[in-house]
Length: 505
Image (cartoon, rainbow, N blue to C red; front, side, top):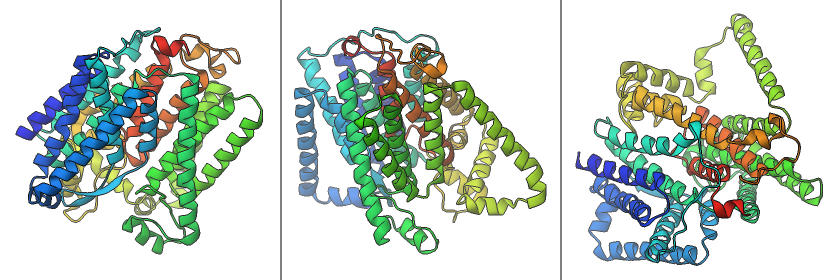
């Protein structure tokens, strides 16, 4: 219970950091939230193998702590000297996870990203100490539903922490809070006030493309040699299928696919808003290479996410009406197929579950859990435990529903589901703010530009990227526990409601 109380304090500190303007108070709040994370993890895993080994080896513990602090200090010095490098470091660190043993299970943690976060917080404290923090005076202030984005983000984290008091699996919920929500929330707070210029946006695109191409090359080598770098589950799975899935530098082929789908969407946005020249040809070639890499993942959810992202770009660049009409025709086709073909083909629910790698059963079981506790759910991180206890039995290999709304409903009930839906609505309101003035697909004149907001191409890219990630979470999960989600929201928000220096770009 003490752990849940400390976790709530950390979540409350993060809420202050998300809601506050750049100040010493916000910097301290970020430091408190981030500083409590290792304490909570150590307390939760006190008797686990890795922590026990460190406790029994004070010298090893001291070296590990000193090395971590030295790296954080070095990163903070770099960020303090060149503040523009912080978002670049975040983008570079996004894909890379370090395999560690947590709670008796292997976990792939974003250790490089945590170090960047720590450096960003320390640099913020140093600037605040020097009274060197610039006030964030937005040229355009959020109104309507958009102004609820930050409060709802803060509420989502605090409500998740409150759920730890009754969770059926408090340890997993605590790990989700400490490894994902708090670090990513701190990164959001730091990135939401970044002064975006066209040059900085080009640098970010170049970094993203460069990393995606490196991952693609690794994936191509894996595919050619039929040899993966890691993940025994995927390696064994490849032995029993006619196709071969690659994961490149990622643990999961679906997460690798999501990253590629996002990169292709960003490149497509730059291509659609670029003038026809040599750069357009280069962008098209890059998109083609990344698409070939995506093919090697055999990730259906990533293909669907890519289609959603590209569809959003088409709607913004040319015609929202035609895209909606196409979606309507597709929906009618699916309904007709289900109505008429179902009786002819005799759809086998068991076969559907097998074809979806067991996700159909997980969704059905998650809905059953929601019906059992519709108001507050079984608690954060408890889906696996509750599913095994109430639905499938103790031997079921499951960690989540692989469908984010179902996981939220089962773990947090109507309370969490309401915040989840409201948050998504507010995100769309914020990312789409003022787009009617600049997007031809929404009625604006071609090449329109709003001097008070960020470049249209960049704003379209952030919205399309968010749509792609959101759609991916509907078939694979990983919404607020994916740093990409927070980064897209932060950049999109700061482009829609830029500060003084941003508008001068």
